[in-house]
Length: 338
Image (cartoon, rainbow, N blue to C red):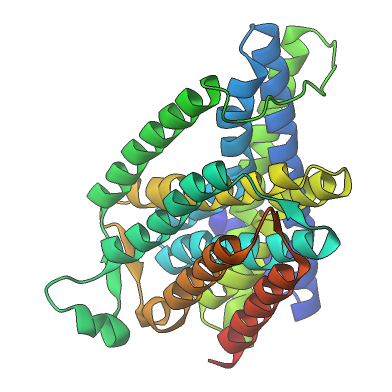
């Protein structure tokens, strides 16, 4: 199938490639949205608490586009695209999406929850970098790159299970807000399963079309594939988070928006990068660009958020949004001029 897709996209003009990327990023996000909505419906019918749904199914579902693209890329022998998408999604979620959210309205801060989850978020970012470092010669990472081994991917997936388990425990203690049941679809269970299959199909097929198209675009523009993945693809696969966060803020649920971003960043490391590495016997190669630019940018934007929370009072103010958004713009500009 991939060879067939490559034969179609190869003769297309550059504007045609961008059109395909835009169209299939949309279907990717739509597929994830269908999958999450129907999973919630099914869980409610089976009597699973809404809080448990929000802490597990929904949070995992919104990172499905990133995971699908990264795993397909890893299996297809494109580790730069797989890892770049995970790292770029963290930069996009925290810098662009949360920055825009804070600009729209101040975001209330429950310091206990935000600090606990925020330190896990920052720790996950450092864990990814440390796992990729060539420990026999750490300095060589800036010239020769590093490697995220397959065993590290399995460790990350194990940590993902522990993180979800602990989140559920914290939620049961009343430390997390109850999620409202908003989906009232009364369709038969068979129809819900059919929609689930449609959602999964959209996610998988969209990923299969996107990867060779992005590769061809990177070649045409003479831009390294990891940079394309960390900017263009990362923005597209972060669309579910973007829609969720903007809707939450405009409806006065800023705390929910902040929680979505922090959770998505954690899952981009443990779920997206972990799954991509675990399905690849040789692991994921992280070339020198990751250590020269992408990893420092990721850690910097996470540190900007932590400092913003630390110096803020009861709300994350608009100045924090300006700082986060400026960080994202700076990283994107440097990426394409690097």
